[in-house]
Length: 75
Image 1: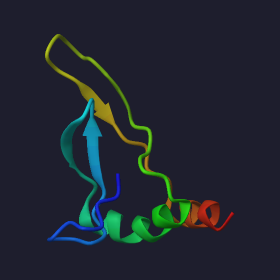
Image 2 (image 1 turned 90 degrees about the horizontal axis):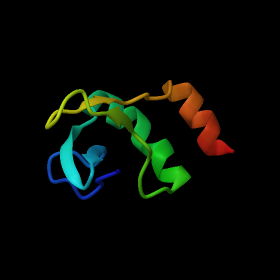
Image 3 (image 1 turned 120 degrees about the horizontal axis):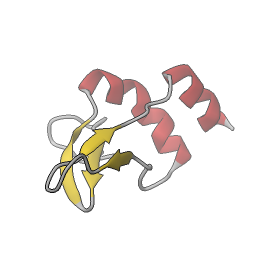
Image 4 (image 1 turned 90 degrees about the vertical axis):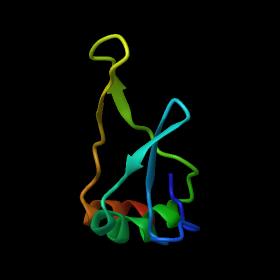
């Protein structure tokens, strides 16, 4: 989810899993992606993951290439 009110980084993109904050997309990647994500206007984006073992999770995020995201956002 975008986190534009983040006091450390107005381009912040936070990753949640089952309602728990897992971490953030890197500052550099967030800075390049945030304007396009804001244009798309979705509150959240789908992240895939699978339980590796009881109490653990394997998480992956497929981030689009920034030029592709910009093109998609422009419609």
